[in-house]
Length: 259
Image 1 (cartoon, one colour):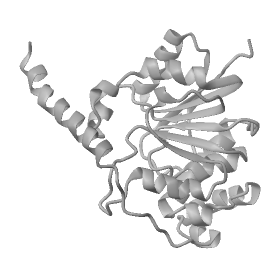
Image 2 (tube, one colour; image 1 turned 30 degrees about the vertical axis):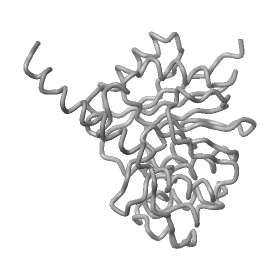
Image 3 (cartoon, rainbow, N blue to C red; image 1 turned 90 degrees about the horizontal axis):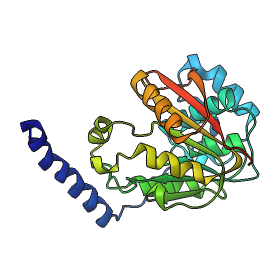
């Protein structure tokens, strides 16, 4: 056994222990945000992106955003709304949507505004704590409280069995390095198993939108779709003037057949 393999074991054990402790000590201080008018939230954006944001605000119902969003969540929600508007086509509001790996739920308002229907957000590391002693889950529950029908689900995707009409998956973990960077145990690296399960959650005719970061993840994602027997259309580079991110992102869209 190589020395590098031996030296990784204590680190992996430490990540597993830290994750376990987060899920045992899962209490949170309450979240409270001062509601901000939509005009005030729009004023937090750079002037260069205001025309795009104003156009989205005119076309979509942003009801509830004043209570749900802080400045960062507002920007990310607008970005997600713009991406879906550009690349996802018409929504299906007949069935709820699911976002996999929703972090603290900050961009759920963008998903809900696009579809006009309820969404679930599921997050494995929901009890990760901020310096304010609040958790991702507490923030997510604050957000969904302002969005009728939406839910924040703290747990593992593999434990879900509901049916969904649309699933979004931003930056799935396809390699070990990002898991380590987020302090998550590498035992959670199971991209094929998670993809297979996500596919079973789609209702016939439902769609799965996957967004990857960087060329190596795009190549790996294409391999996973092929191995799973899922026909996915490559969307190419995902571009939006509202993107607050530096690295290039790419997308895939897959539709579950009716038969």
